[in-house]
Length: 64
Image (cartoon, rainbow, N blue to C red):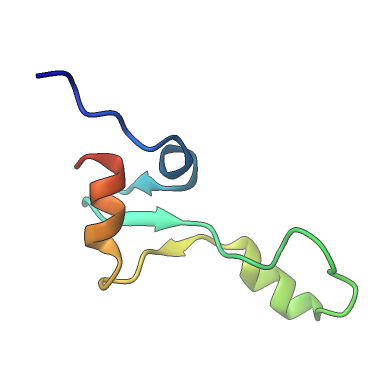
């Protein structure tokens, strides 16, 4: 049986934390930034965790 391949897009988008949670970046910070407030743009820079309802799907993509 061959090895399972990890989804390339997921590999680039998600990282594991030391405690095993999955970290992700926030959306809406790539373009059309002029109409967004500085406070909002600063919040979008910070990474956050994947929601518990999506953890299973992300783990499947990463073969965890």
